[in-house]
Length: 219
Image (tube, rainbow, N blue to C red; front, side, top):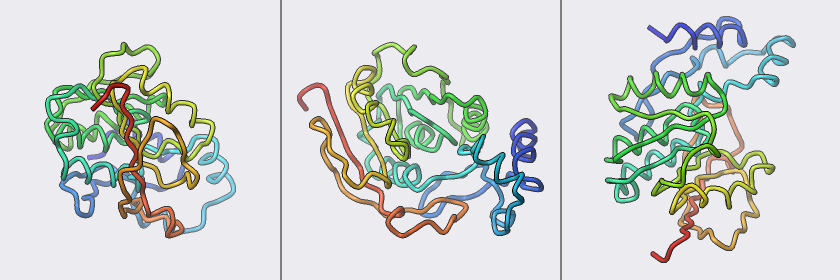
């Protein structure tokens, strides 16, 4: 049964929407996501207003998060035995993938209390243990790696690229929105294909997820 508080919050935003356990393609993880059938309809003006005011990011698996999860599963050395913080965790997919790949500790960090509840529910679903934080800047500089998936959609967040290296030795960023990404500390690792679930019929360009890496210390 879906977590009651999350189901109530979702229902308050999108009418009859339901949270369902959803297996992710080409990935061993599963998440509580909004049911696809309810997304395949026209929203009322009131639903649209509520969604825009309080977007339920936490009940979607965004393409960049899925790409990050697949990447960590294939390249576990990034997180094995390390202390990891998942910034803007949303559903918690990146942090959960890190925990499954052998991280020593994973902290899911998000401003939205509902997102942290979703992270907790999804951690239970996948049999991992996470820590939780609502204030990135209150965290000590003790992390080996900061994971950042689908955060740069808001260009106002670009200055955070420097801040990540103030809390972690390295940062691994997955993004499908910024086409002119340029930062002297970040190098491009490659491009992965992924999609958002439920499928929002996003333009194909948003299914191309770029990975970037930065380190404040010589590798």
